[in-house]
Length: 131
Image (tube, rainbow, N blue to C red):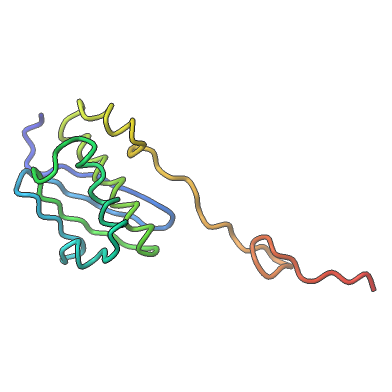
């Protein structure tokens, strides 16, 4: 382990970016100055945020401060999950196989497709009439 008191990790998902700071502590998680239970009201989003800790059996051992911006709630939860996994890797490189096995270190490349000119959406076309 390194001698640093805080470990940093950046996570991304869709258009969301999460900056994560992890330090040894009691297990409190705060997102943008609020508790993560308040910030992420859905249980599925809370489970996604805690997934890196469950995978590495470090639940309740670290205090986490998160600054997240952009996108919606689901994208932000995914960005936070990615950032926590990267920060845990900074804490101890031996956690890499456990995080890699659950796919927590892979950045999800799926993005919204852009709207093209001459049509109303990304793929939808205006109605075709032969005459």
